[in-house]
Length: 586
Image 1 (cartoon, one colour):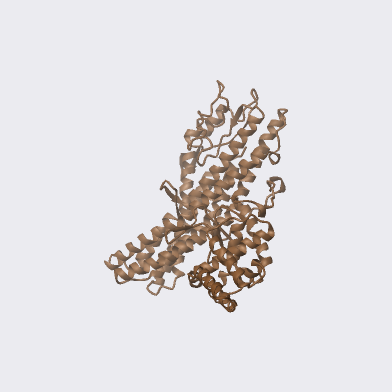
Image 2 (cartoon, helix red, strand yellow):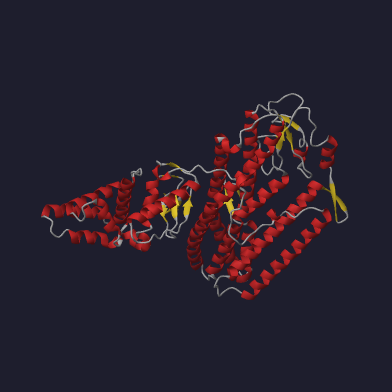
């Protein structure tokens, strides 16, 4: 069982995961708005907007990918701790009843559920976070067109218009979009997904434990200020089998969005021994439901007062986002911006923040409520994994992943594979890898000119992967970090065939040497041509030596290198070589 206070802690940890990303996105959009500057014609305005939209999209994709990589371990840690604490509490009750529950660390089924749901939550959030690139583009485009109309028609000054545009964007925050089309802030999506995911996962673990021990009755927790629909059943006894005289799972709305363990529900349950005393009497539950507090001399129901506190906390979070947006304007080099009025606006926002913060503190003092820092959290530092005691750490099942086939891998496994493949590749190539050490793991890939790319060595030197992959496919991208990463996009575009053929042949030879499963690719036809070229020209005695030398040469000079080695060929061999090389030219 988890207490409402523990759920609050979980909510606090969840709020930290993407809070800095939201601020960075707001600042990024604000800076792009300022970068466009004042446009005195529609054509000029549209051109500048298009340029900044492209840059904005890529920057936010990179930002989101970076935070997604950092967030995975944090989310897994939250789920692990919650799952272990839940069963530790419940198992104590079972043992007092003379039962012998299997520890969670020894239950493969429970571990799999815990790890799988943590990964699913992380993947869901990763996919949602990537949608901020599209929604930010839309917000930017709408803001710029509105500002242009306001300024060109004389409704507002240029500085006033873009400050209003930034304030409007900050009021919405970084927006994620669900497949259904529903939109919400990244802050709300993170909090809801993590808190609800943890609650539902722990509930399933408890049901598994109850079934294992043939236990039927559970006592629901209770807390002051519960929403009215939940106050009706909190603190009472539930029969999992639906016995008469007790609440059923249907009675408490288990499995529904608005019921027990639904969206943002902080209630939990624990094993109840039939005939034992209940934690809460009916009088205590009634008192909780009708509890009031005094604020500014008026009696207010505790639930209503808590909703007032939530509104105040949301306003303070919003103040922080507004401040971030105006700061984004001030970081630009826009000569059209009235710096003095922008600084004055910043001061107004900071004053507004101070007023709202003082109001909240006064409210808390009068009502004796606690400040919920998780709902105020908008941070400017990186996410750091929380240290946990050994008792709360789920053991990892380490495998020799490098010998695995094509399959779906967890983010932790992909990180392990990336390190292993990097070490292997370094054994075969002398130059230093340009790999950043980071992975961009996406379910839906990146669109480029209408084509979805799932695997790539990106130009920021991250490696893009889909969760469904194989070690040989990661080796391919690691090799690019030793090759084309030393050059430019233009060189790659003009020499992509010889580059991909070289990299894939090297991948094939490394897999052969290391006994790694080699996955066929779209470049295998080009690989065959390179193998035939080495056989005809005899550059090296083995294909591995041949491709090692080839990869050490700039991509635009590789074909020239082969031709220089072929000066003594017979006419028929030279003709065949020419045909093969033509296939490898762009």
